[in-house]
Image 1: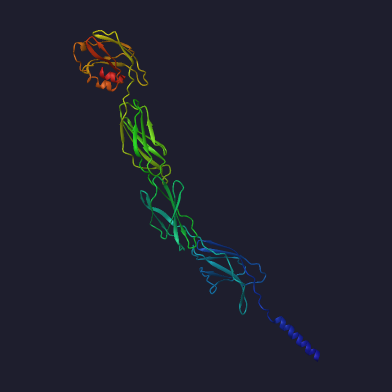
Image 2: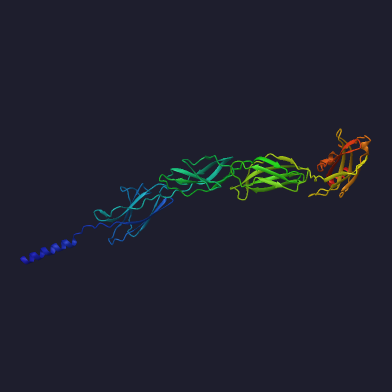
Length: 432
């Protein structure tokens, strides 16, 4: 009887041990691997290798993202097979802290692992949209842009612009315009962009680019030099302030305009083989590469025209003038023909001038290209007859060389004898 009683108690104890539920086991912690923000979404990834069977995973978000709130209002994912989840409704530019835990549902309560944080998550800011230049005014521009198309956590906007020399300038503003950028430099091209900046200093990608080129300043102090006795003109000018890539120059001629360009460091232009005794006009303007229109230029105004008349194409004076064989009525003159670079000597002018009263009493035009000797008769002077020769020869002498002179005494009459002038074929035809 005693032995039966002991056996019954043993069987009942064994049944109690088998039937009674064991205490729940706490699951191990989840291992977060990635939190990837994109626009208004945050995609989470994690690993979980615990052999213990869990019911799912739980998320909390500070601040809240969609249905995911803080630990008093977490988001349950009742699927123990998932290893990724995308939160929707995040605000770009705002910093989020997201935590995860595994949980096990029991009949009486829930058992969960500890909370483990993902790295801080900050969805990237969206770029400002439709950046435009609403006004261009000499050395300033006015910029305006649209805010991103969805709600963002923007602390301010950063406007940056780069000039033609690569210099970068940055300006911050809390609004989306209009923003005036002034004090730009003449002759520079500028490229403008704008970025959104969050309260943590994170920046969005840049907006679209807009460009503007400031016209260069007008050149200054235009001058002209005429090499004596040549058919050349040398024009010079100063650079002025600012920057330029070159100059456009225009020479106005009787036959039409000649337009040319020179580099930005060149401040002179030489013209050769121009017509003698001809009126020319010159003007110049600065040019700078236009960043708004590649291959084109922005220009300054033209300088005021400089008018200039080229020198006469005068031959050289005759050389080695001598007077021999003097008689009461004549003298033999000899000379050497000048060496000419341009044109051909076709004639000589001989004038006889009384020294006593500096009066021109005779003139002779010798249309002999190769003359070296001339027997000149001055009977008119001895007879006291004054020939009005000066006015007649004004136009001729204007085109001729300087006079070569020699003086001597004949009988009782003192003469300054003889003055030669040489001129070109076109004048000879007009005055013979």
